[in-house]
Length: 82
Image (cartoon, rainbow, N blue to C red; front, side, top):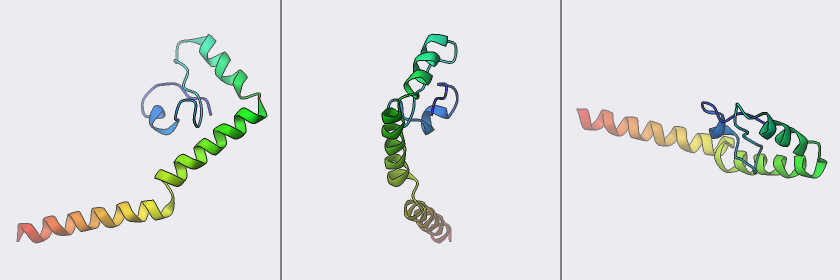
């Protein structure tokens, strides 16, 4: 993936791990990033990096853990307010 370093995009794309983040106003960086994606091995490596990040941070079990943690925190606040 190639995305610019604007807004929340750097939170989604890990530079050199799951994609590239060229400066939005630097055509040379964009050309370099897109050129790298013409290499199948590089695309495979970036895909594996993206998968690793997803598995670590976004897999359903992780989402459930975070949701349960939020519910416990909300319940604790409710019980303390009484």
